[in-house]
Length: 44
Image (tube, rainbow, N blue to C red; front, side, top):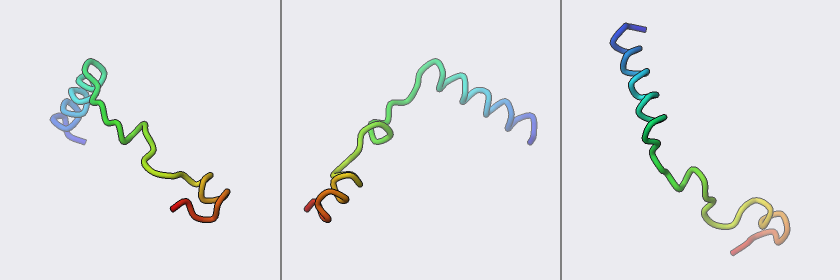
């Protein structure tokens, strides 16, 4: 890993720590989940 790549990685880490990006798809499930499929066979 080059010095420039390390500096870039550190800068990105610091930026994410100070001002995290909010991505709702990381936290919220869309649509019926696997428990629904197991319970009913098909949720649609």
